[in-house]
Length: 350
Image (cartoon, rainbow, N blue to C red; front, side):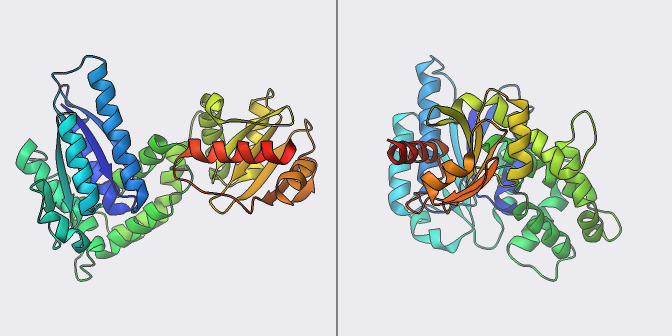
C-alpha cells in the first residue's frame, strides 16, 4: 500500500502527518510519501505531483499496489474535487479527505470520500480515522498531543492543554530555518521533530513554559552534527550541506560565472560565505525572496556589486551586495523561480 499524504503547513496540518508517519513508517507493506501545501493554487500543484508519482509507480511495473491519496487540513473546491476524482480513477487510486473547514461544506456534500467535521481539528479527525481503519495507537500514546493540537486549532481556551498548544502553534510557524519550497522533505522533518519534542514535554510541570524555555536547544539538537556551535552556524552548516548535495539543480550563471540560487533562505552573510568556502568551484551565491529582493555574496571571484547594479539597480561591496528584481514573478515551485531568474539575468546581460 502506497499512501500519498498532502497536508496544510500549520501545526494542525503537520500534526496530521506526524500521526500518519507514526502509523505507517514502520509498516513493511506500506510506504508513505508526504506533501504540503498552503491554500490556493499550490494545492492543485501538489495533487498533480501525487498523480504523477502514482503514474511513475505504474510505469515501473508496480501495478498490484494499492494507492491511497490522503488529504488533511485542506479543503477542495468542487472543481478541484472533480478533477482529482477523475485523475484518481484513471490511475486506480483511492481518495480520502479529512478536514474541518466549513468552506468545504458544498464539496463535501458531493463526494463520499470527503470527510468534513467542523467540530474537531484535522489532527483529531485523522487520529480517529487511523484508529478506526488501521488500529493505530491502541496504547493511547499520542492522545495527549492530539488533544493539545485540537485545543489550540479550534480554540478550546478552557482546555488544560490550550496554553501548551499555543506554544506549539508558534513553534511551527516560527520554524523557518529550512526553506519549504527548496527543501520540502527536510523542512517537514524539522517540523515533525518539533512536534515529537512537544509530545515528550506533555505531563511535565508547567509544560508550556518548559517547552518554550527549551525550544532553542530542541532546534539545535536537530541541526547539530559532529560538534556543537551557535544555532546560526549549525543551521548554516546544515543548509550548506543540503545546497552542496543538490548544487547541480541550483546552478545559475552570470556572464560566464557560476553561481548557486537559493530561495528565501535568509541569513545570507553566514550561509553564503559558508557555501562558497565549502564549494570553491562556485563564483557567487545568490538568495532571492518572494518579493524579488536578492542578496549576493562572493569570495573574491567576481565583483557582485557590479552584478547587483546590472540586474537589480542595487549595489554594495565587491563581495557582498543586493538589489531587487522589480519584475519578479514568484512561484511555490523552485524550478519556475530559477528559470525566471536565469532568463531575467540573460535578458539584462545580452
